[in-house]
Structure formats: C-alpha cells, structure tokens
Amino acid sequence: MSSSVPLPPPYDRLGRHSLLPVPSHDDSARMNFLANMNVHVGAVLFPGVSASYEAKVKPEFEKERGRAPESSVEVRDAMKSDPAYQTWSALRRNTQEARQQVGRSFVYKQLDTLVERAKTINAGSNRLRLDESVKIPRYLSAADNHVMPGSYYTEVVPDDISAPANYESGHYTTVAGGTGPKSDLVGRTMAAWLKENYPDIKPQRIVDIGAGAGFNTIPLAQAYSDAEVWVVDVAAPMLRYGHARAKEMGVENMIFQQADAESVDIEPGSVDVVISAMFFHETSTKAMRSILEKARAMLKPGGLMLHMEQPNFDPDTTPFEKFVRDWDCWYNAEPFWAKLHTIDVVDEMVAAGFDRDDTFETSQPIDRFDPSYPKWVGSFSRHAHEAKMREGAEKPNPKKAGGMYMFGATKQS
Ligand SMILES: C[S@@+](CC[C@H](N)C(=O)[O-])C[C@H]1O[C@@H](n2cnc3c(N)ncnc32)[C@H](O)[C@@H]1O
Image 1 (tube, rainbow, N blue to C red):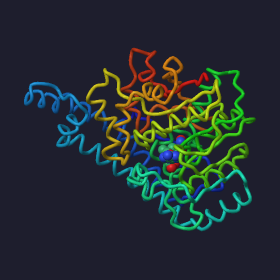
Image 2 (image 1 turned 180 degrees about the horizontal axis):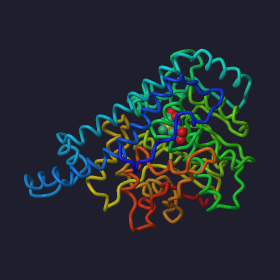
Image 3 (image 1 turned 90 degrees about the vertical axis):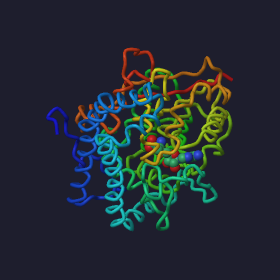
Image 4 (image 1 turned 180 degrees about the vertical axis):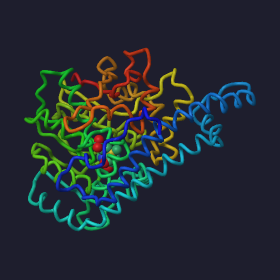
C-alpha cells in the first residue's frame, strides 16, 4: 500500500451503546482487515482502473468503433475484460459480501441477549409505533440492498433486531469509519445546513422518511430538542433497534413509526421540516414521485423539505464517471441507483406540486468533526474517488462542489 494512504480508524472507535453487538478480538480483526481493504481498493487500486481506461480500453474502443464510448454501459462492456477493472470490481464486491457475513456471524451469536435488551428498553413506550399491516414495497423486497442478506426488514426470530445490528456493525467498515463513530455524518451535516441557512426556524415537528434506525435523525433531534422528530420506516427491526438505541443515547423526542412513506398517516399541513437521507436511491421512480407529493402534503405552508442523495448526472458527466458511479446498481444490489442518476430532481419536485422558484439544489461542507475521532478520516472512503470526480472548477454547482449534495424545496401555501 502506498505510504500516502492514511489508515482507517480501528474498529473499536465505533461508538458503543448497549444494543451494539460486542465483537470478539477476531471479529474486530476481520472488520479492521475489511476496512483497510476497502481503503486499499478505493485509494490504491482505483487509480489503476482509471489509467487502464485512458491508456488502453478507450483507445481500443475508439479504434474499433471510430468514436469514444458514449454511455456508462458502453464503458462497462468495454472494461469487462480489463484485468485492473476485474480486480477492483471483484474485490469491491467481495469486501461487501464479507462484511455482511462477518457482521451477521457475531450478531447471531448474541442475538437472544440483544433482542431481550431491546425489548426491555422498548417496553411500554408509546414512541415506538409498530404496525404489522405495513407491506414491504416490491422494489425493496426485490433485492437484498447492498448485498445485505434479508435486507432491513427480515425477521429470523420474534422481535428481531439482527438486521440493524448487522447494518450498524458493518457500516463502519464499508465506509472505513468515514461517517463517524455514531454513523451520523449525514445527519450532522444536514443539521449544520439547517442551522446556517434557516437560523431562526423553531420546528415543532420534523419527519425523516426512510429513516431506518434513525442514525442520521438523531443529530436533528438533538439540534431541535423542542421538536417532535419522526422516524418513518417500513422495517420493524430498524425501528425497534433505533428506538432502543436513541433511548440509550438519551434522546427522548423521537417517534419511531412503522409506515410506508407513500401512505404514512401524518396530518396534512402539520410538519415544519421533512427530510430524508440516502433514501430515494432505494425506492423506484413511481414511489419517489408519490413520496415527494406526500412530503409536500404533510408540510405546513412555509415548511421546508430537504433530501440528501447521490447527485444526478450533469450534461458534462463523462461516460467513465457514469460507469463508476453506476457500479453499485450492477454489482452492489442497488437497483434504482443508476436510474436515479438520470432523473432531474427539480422536475420531480415541480411535478409533486412545488413551485420551481421554491426548489433548490445545494451542497454543504461535510461535518466530519468529532472529538474522539481523527479528522483526516474524511480524506478517503469507498466512495472518495467518486466524490473526487464530482469536484471541479464550477464551485457553485452543488453537484460538483465536493460537499454533501442535497435537494429540496419550500412550500409557500
Ligand atoms: C439506505 S436506508 C437509509 C436509512 C437512513 N435514512 C439512514 O440515513 O441511516 C433506506 C431505508 O428506507 C426504508 N424504506 C424503503 N422504502 C420505504 C418506504 N416506501 N417507506 C418507508 N421506508 C422505506 C428501508 O427500510 C431502509 O431502512
């Protein structure tokens, strides 16, 4: 490994709470190996893939076809027989598979204890609102998102929390610690954006849709401690775990509601801020449209909507960049990821009823600071090369500003 690549933080920096599965020495060693491997794959091997494309694969394509590749699929098909790409892609997939297996192996060993602990913490709470009638949307059950066996919702024992326990345990490894010890970097960054851009708002109700276990909702709940902050998700295990976890962290102003974001029963016109983090790429075109309409309906006049997502492609996004950014769709079980890259989110917000002038795309410097945590960790991640490709001279373009991309709108009436 090149000496210029910093090491990821060790696995024991992952923020502890009583719901988090306890890894053995060897489990931690496996997670540390995978985090280091992810950094190596992203920071050391990926530049070789780029170089191989420029020096060999693209010129050969041009010679044969009389033009450069024009789409991500054309680049992919040309790259398939390239050894640098094969190595990078296979290792990227395999570290992801291994992370799931390692995480699940130590979660399952202690599942009875974890389930009992969550049950005890959750008992009698009126802030955990499960609803057995909620159906898992087809787009979610069609794939094990990011190669996570059973996805977010599968229950292997009654009152199960194994999916989120594995999700939190392994997330740290996949992003090489890049989202911080509490896996809440996105939420911290969104809260910072709100405080900077809307310093005077005093929301009474905030709703986070597709909020999972609420890792990224907690910073909002802490930043707006007078607000009632809703975590809406279809997956009961995420909500059980998230409710107990938030309680263990001393956060008491959150409601964990099992519901489909398309049909969640929240009084129209009753919400000040509706947010989502890394959510839409796991939905579908149809669902995204109806969820944006639903979000608008739940907002009060003057309310604000804010979503953090992958930015879509620009006219100047190169076919190679598209190919790299679409990889997760083809090989990391993220079926909607590539399609979302082609959708104009401003048009979608307008179709959902927002005035075009009230929509925005924005970028916020990523808030990586945590006193217990090395600041330099932000210098790399599994997706760092993608972020790098988005950086550019046109700083005002939020898709290229190098910070965290978000889009949203205000509702006037
Ligand atoms: C990638 S996770 C993001 C979780 C969370 N926002 C975070 O930042 O940790 C996507 C979540 O969306 C949930 N989800 C997918 N479709 C949904 C829908 N229609 N309504 C509510 N939740 C949904 C999944 O169960 C999953 O927990």
